[in-house]
Length: 488
Ligand SMILES: Cc1cc2nc3c(=O)[nH]c(=O)nc-3n(C[C@H](O)[C@H](O)[C@H](O)COP(=O)(O)O)c2cc1C
Image (cartoon, rainbow, N blue to C red; front, side):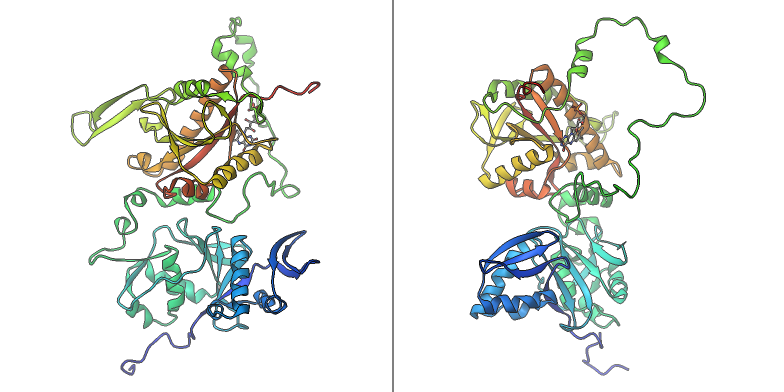
């Protein structure tokens, strides 16, 4: 029998949180006494620090207890500054361990630049449950606990912690959890709540199902769709992204043209009707190509931009009809536009980062397809520049595009109707719209190029919209193409 009032979870000495340099990072003092973070062949300047702080900073190799950094002493203040600079550059991870020298229980790997470990305030009477977006998986020889909602992933170094967390598939009161063998420590629970991997059930009788977690916009997401969205865009994970050629020398590239099926083939050339004169659409398809460099002396005119939006994306008409053809269900509104859209959803919105457009001030705008108007959105200049620069980088262009169109999705517009296929449909809609952009740009004598990456966190910052409510799913650079160089 357990003695009254005696706490359980014995043998689990309190876990403490340490900040530690990522494994590939070392701190060195540079020639001008500046502290440098060195990794591979790169180094990043971190600023000048006192000799005492630089010496203390070496403890970051094994881990500095975060609570010991809270004090106001001069050296502590310097270390706080250093820790913040390292965190901003993604060079820190955090370990939960029972002692400085003991093994890691959990390692927290930040996934977004602004992640800092924060402990949610928890009471013994709070009821916790795992988020339906949380998942545990093997990564190389480690187990990682992740969620597309979380700013960090948690590497569970002790399998007992994984099994202790598994009981939270069912809502449990913290009081009850504390009595269980292998209780994973309040410090970890508080960090997991802060990351939305665990959430608190606020209302009595809530069983932790969809409606209990977050707002209606989150309810509308299927698990696999939110994981796909956050992992296949930039901004909310720390994995390599883009054309990194990770399998060169490992697996040969699949061929550009599929090897033929065996057997006799039917030659279509023999059956072709006599070639009529090429139709306008046939000509456009032949002329269409990607244009990455724009003529800085001849920006797109505002009238051309207005015409481009009119021909590609404007609402042409709308109608209202009941959900059921027999008149039942809610009344739904549909619009007609120049491009097709799955289920007539037309969930795609256009945001314009304008660098140069004759007659339109540089800035960030939303295209209101219903009223065919542009709404200026006040954004920080550095964010606008970061978005344009990322597009330039993605295209390997000599300068930023004259106009960058971000295609954002109002996700709920599709997932309100479709189960399992919502996000896939959105991406298909993006492909359709991009081809429409290409063809109209070509027809108007303008140049365009699709861009495969977009930063969903930067867009959220610029618009103030939550990443799961409305966010980028595609981008297109538009401008007047630079004349090809002589001899090119
Ligand atoms: C979905 C999609 C994403 C693309 N992403 C990029 C990109 O990030 N950077 C780039 O320079 N070109 C990008 N492109 C353009 C392709 O590289 C280009 O279409 C392809 O090489 C064929 O060349 P063409 O468009 O001139 O016919 C993208 C095209 C598509 C359809």
